[in-house]
Image 1 (cartoon, rainbow, N blue to C red):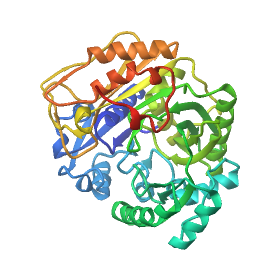
Image 2 (image 1 turned 180 degrees about the vertical axis):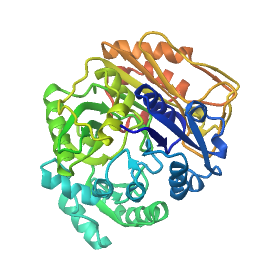
Image 3 (image 1 turned 135 degrees about the vertical axis):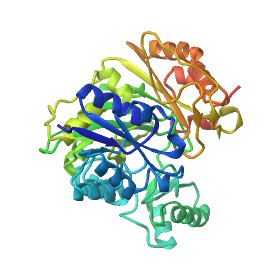
Image 4 (image 1 turned 90 degrees about the vertical axis):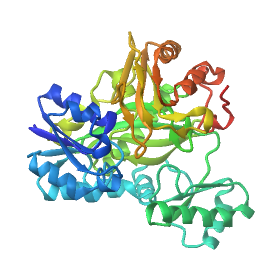
Length: 445
């Protein structure tokens, strides 16, 4: 087992990893930008190293500085958390070159799943259902129009190196194709320095359902059931729950088996997720694979009593997994609390938290790195907290969340707490009647 782990991340996920390391008797090293010097992950780690100024490119994305921090503190492993360098094959390879274990997927696995068109071909070969579309990247406009006609409108263009909705355009009519083609490629080039796009059939009334997986270094893989991530705004998740209210036992079994096939196809090592789009008829299609821990991992932990960060560390250290699949025993909902103003287009609201009271009580878990007088910096993701409600049934979990949100006080900045309070009261949400288009009709009062 590792003696010391450097956490190449910030905020709540860095603190989350530190907590598990402490329970495992592993020393921790926090890294931080000058903007994060007062963050809780810096306070609770055994050691802390400043790695640069506030911009991510100069700190949390600065590979030489991270490797130097690991070297001077004698860390024998690096945990990348999520975001930043967590799915960067170059970083994974450089860690290995320097004798430091990257707690995550190998460079080959990251590359195999990181390019979406390649990932789709890999999944097809493994027998995992995929959305009809182009065989790889589209070479020109003429080819795109031809494929769209063949598979039928609506279709969607996606950037091969994409994420967060960048380089993505829905097309409902042939006459709209050229404009969408030009804007998708320009946006992809600006965001990823890669204007490659591919085409897929657009799945109507889709649910975004992901399957948590784990795989070890010995060719074994298992799944830990599903999370429904359909409530999104501009392709950014706002709320997740497990089990999905849309799921049936038959569908859960089929999707779990498909996710394990996907993991075995790339000999996956670590924990990750296989993400699917599920249409209104419960046909499911592979979307992508995330080769890292997910923001929403706590809800899975709570319904199966399983520490995913601990499992991640044990797999990286060479432990074998049981190979057993897990299924939800409870219901859990996670609300992402962001420093944003939901009444003003979810505009970011960085600044000083002047007063803070967090909820507690039975069935409530809070993952957060903030405190009263903490200054939320403007340089990073706006999430300041995750609130998780756990109960025996979905209705009880919603009621627990509703109660917990009413206790949550954050003053000095705007947050998404009022949005989530209204969401808990929405009749369609309470019935489990929602898709990825839910936010297009949801109105804040």
